[in-house]
Image (cartoon, rainbow, N blue to C red; front, side, top):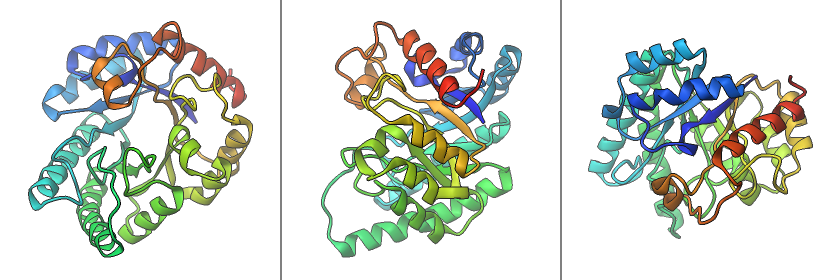
Length: 283
């Protein structure tokens, strides 16, 4: 198990020049970095890979940024744009030696509305169809797609572990797994540990975030059963801090972060990592 940090805490968008952050992350003790690729043109995969190797940190995951027009359940144009984008970041992940693409790889974030059951079935079928095509591409590239349920305010499509597992089982690909996040689970799950155990060996990625989307450990989440559940299912993937700050204005607005969670964003990273290593019994 490795501990990682999502670069959204410090910059948006992540570009090739942003690799200057990697040495800092390694110095703090992170094993991996999670890179959100807002647009494939923002990075040169070869240069980012070389910078990560020089810093001694692994690129553990590429975060899909499902912005406007990237919707696997939307219009024909949006589906095409979404599939093209996800294929491109799968290719970039493979080029960087990164094993997985993670996030809400199904719909534009923020699309949350009541739809009738027939429309839900139609949208589910569209996502399955598009994910099957993406899964075939990911299999060829040796990359996993880890699908993340979000809370009800960010999507109406996948909110829970059960819904995520239903989608994964419908796609029927070894390249598609589940991505769980303590912030979203804190809102949607009856019991976070039970959800982790239900995911079992289909759990491919994990975000450790505070209940206020801040520092893990400086919140009201009961982390003891969460850690026990991850160990019980023999989770071997990354545990990544994906917290946000008012310092990165674009992300703060998108994630509804209106106040400081800690005096500095560095403290979210360093305090969070110290807490997680203690919780998991790691030095």
